[in-house]
Each structure stands twice: as C-alpha cells, then as structure tokens.
Amino acid sequence: MKNLNVAAVVCEYNPFHQGHWYHLKETRRICDADYIIAIMSGNFVQRGEPAIVGKWARTEMALRCGADLVVELPVPYALSSAQFFAAGAVDLICKMSVVTYLSFGSETFGGEAGTAKLERFACRTLHGPEIDKVSLRKGHSYAAAARTSGSAAPNDILGAEYIRALRQQNSDIRPIAIERIGSEHDRPGSARYIRNLMRDLDSPGDWDELKSLLPQPAMNLLKREVESGRCPVLPEYFTQAVFTSIRSLGAEGLRSCPFVGEGLEYKIYSAACSCTDLGALVRECTSLRYTASRIRRILFAALLGIPHEMVRMPVPYIRILGMNRGCGLLIDALKKCARVPVITSKAKFWKAAADLPESAPAKLFLQAENRAADLYALGFPAEDQRTGYSELTHPLIYV
Image (cartoon, rainbow, N blue to C red; front, side):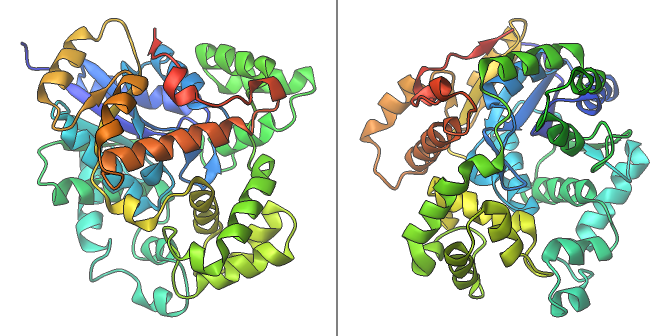
C-alpha cells in the first residue's frame, strides 16, 4: 500500500460557505494532499447551539465541495470550550493513524512562518506562564484572558489549542495554519452572517444574496433542506425543552454538567425560574467571567444529558458520516491502522455494544449521540420531519 498524504481539517460548516471552500482548496494545494478528512461537529456546535442545518446535509456539502471523508466529532467535544473541543478533535485524528497534516484557519497567522509564530504562542501563552492573570483576577473569562495575552482572534486561540493538543499527544502530525480570507465574524460571507440571513428567507433578494455566499453545491443542498422543512433549526426552537431540563435538574443536578462551577449552577437555575425565553436566560447568566457561549454550552449539555466526565474521556471510536466513492485506499488504510473501532454502520455497532457495561465510554458516547439526534429533530420547522431513530436508520452519505 502506497504511503498516503492525508490532511485533516476540524470544522462545523454551519453552514458551508465560500471561505470553507477556499480553505479546503488551499489545504489540498499546500499539503499536496491525496485525501482530506473533515472532522465535523454533528447536530450541535461549539457556540452552544444546534447547527442551523443537520449533519447529514452538511456532510454532503463537505463531500461535494472538496472533502473526501467526513468523520463526526462526538457531541461532548463539539459542545465544549476551545481547549476540550481541540483536544477531542486531535485525539480522534491521532487515533486514525493515517493523518499527515492538520490544517486550520487563522485570522492572523498563515503559511510556514505564521504557523511557527502560532506554535510559539501556543507554548508561551495557553495555560502557561504568560496567560493574562490580571484579566482573570478581574473576573474576565479564560478566552478573554488568552486574547489579551497575545492573540485577539478566536480562531487563533483554537489553532493554538490544536497545536498544544498535538504536542501533548507527542504527535508527528504537522499543523498548517491557512490565513482566512474575508468571512469574519458578522461580516457578509461569514457563517454567522449567513445564519442570520437564513432566519428570514421570504424575499427573492434574500435567496439571491445567499446564493452569492455559498458554493453552488452547498446552495443546492441548503435549498433542499429548507424546502423539505428540515432547515433552519434555530436555538429558540428548543426553549421549552431547555427550560424543562434545567428546572427538572435543579441546581444540584446542574453540578454534573460540563463547565459548571463557582456556584454558577445556582445562577442558571434561578434564571431558569425567573426567565421565560432562552435569550433572556443566557443574558441573565452572562458576565465578564461567564461568556454567552459557555452558558449556552451548559444549557445544551444539560438538555442532552452530557456529564462533565465525558469531555475528558478519550475518543472511543471513529464514526464515519460520509465519503467520496474514490477514497477506497483511504478507507482501507483507516480500517487497518486505526487504534479504535471504525464505525460505518451505527446500527450494527450499537448492537455489538449492547453487552458493554453501562459505564463503557463507547456506550456513553453512542447514547449521547442518539439523544442528540432525536432531540435535534424536534427543532425541524416541519412537524412531519420530527421523527426519531435517525442515528440508527440514516444511511452513510456517498458522493
């Protein structure tokens, strides 16, 4: 078997836009990659929200726009802070044992020189002696303290966390930073701008603007999902479910959720009893120290029944969501070299895992993904699309 040159990208594609297409093309060019593996968040994303379009459609978008294989980032990591999001993704990539490069976007750094600077930033600052402890003492969040330590951009911090996680794994995988072109934050073309645009697609002008921001294959799939009633899926659609979860758990129950501490459980429970909508609940709990994203992650982790222990667990399996038909060599190499089971049929693996102890990581992760899929479906605009069991019945995506 020939030595394959494989690049991995960690992504959400929420939704897939022109900036993502550029990143995949540059990754293939710079890494001279035979294959690109997309490690993609499933139905819930790092902002602490449901993805605006489901993971199966986003998998197909990625495959039609440049990725060769899409592997799911398990939901406990996908709903985590940058540190645990990156650690989970890198653990997954390392356990594949076929990846040569890890490519990621950066607002500030790009190319070999930029990647070297980001490596120095990762070693010097993140969780290290140069973290801005003054900011922490003033009550700022960790993310804010890290930004004031030498990098102002969230994607730079995430890139540095990838590098840090690679070093902790003693991995030979080469990190490659690719400078992002446009598509930043709320600017036209950014994922957030596109999500806001998708909230109201009544006028032809909205569709025309959207068409200019997405590659044509992604646009076709997005339109299909909207017309089918499976998109957009918005955070406010989960208001009653989240409030039911928080009020049922109570402050004591919230302590078991990831990223809850310092009495935050009491603040969240109190707000859930006094507020009546999700946005107000998040605003009531947000402060300099506790970002809105952290609060949202806690709320949705509570809804999905994810305990804090899971974000620190090692990856128990590699779950494939979709592939191009031309990546047979990659699949053969992955099945031969991977250090954990490779799942192509969730139903078969679920049956095989039935005899595992209830505390086995593989079983816990499978159960969490089943809950995430079934609850996510409740956010579909069309009632006839809100059925469950999709995790065990949806076929692999082949392009």
